[in-house]
Image 1: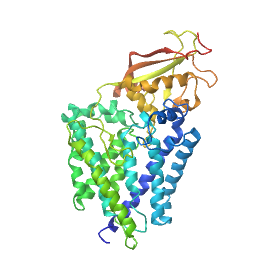
Image 2 (image 1 turned 60 degrees about the vertical axis):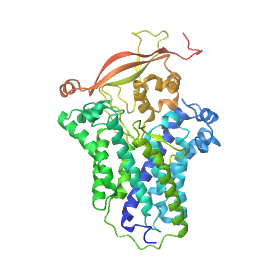
Image 3 (image 1 turned 90 degrees about the vertical axis):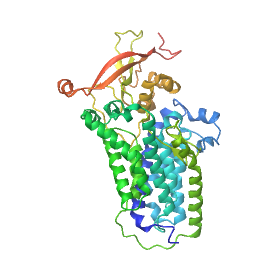
Image 4 (image 1 turned 135 degrees about the vertical axis):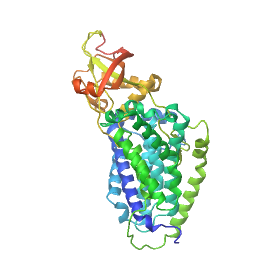
Length: 473
């Protein structure tokens, strides 16, 4: 069946699969290292409480059948192991059917995690990893040429990612239409990176060029993905360059990296593929049936893209097979940060010895330069950004965070860069204050060494202690 496979995309499939394995590995590693404090049995939003109220059909997950922290950890570390094996090329050492099952394992495990992850996993790139990972199951291994229809579906996902993001910007904040959004975005984005300060201080005309280039890449170039070569390769290369620019300018977990991975199989890589037999009939039937299903399900994101009330980052089925994407339809003009502080004083006063907690990624100490973490995802740091935007958004978990800090909970403290209190002497009270942060100017940076300047705005949470604690004042 010569029409079914495309041997010229042999190398494209290989680099795509390696990139997908790396992203799976990053996702499972973050889950394994962070879950106990977030969704564990004693977490801020415990999985057992979630599965007790949400039925299996609405959130298919292994953890509906059984949950314990040990079982979750086993699933997450198993996902790491399988991802590492796929990265090492294990799928090329087994028959085609076994390779498909091997790629199905991380998809099923990560689906189980996302579907019980609640607010901590409510990011568009979670669904995107699942949608792309599901397609990865059907790309085959060295026994067959890459199926043309699966390669097309990967381009279709890339088209929806870019075009949907472009539409949400044009329909959203007017600063995108005026080409002024990037005068604010590098400063107000959820988690700046080490170069964000420099990006923010680029000349305003260059910011306008950035915004205009973004519109071209997201609203025009996606259509060229379906053009003949070498036009399709040029379109994919332009998208890759744009995504790498975004990688340099901030920390967006694996959103940019998975978009790069999606673009890799579009490129016509120089290759000398080995001769292969025709794809077995069962494989052709399975791939065509799954492809037909996915194309049928695509009507939902297409209808959403065409709607004036376009939604960002929504899944239309509990398996996350086909989703809609988008980012930064609205860009903040001012950056606010919630700063958590504790005191050992029995009676908290304004002049008490308040000591500040430091997070790994989110801005805190004005003199501390941002770090690069992507594609690793610091979930608590990201949600602290949302908390500053909307206290109501943080209400389900923020109280649990404070309670665990008052207990010096080891799992929670591991999510932080630094706790100002020793392990055997937790704080008696914790408070949260809201500050406005802005990048310093070149002159301020030279004079103070600080990349941020912050100004107190208001109280976010008054001094709080553990109810009924033996340490109660």
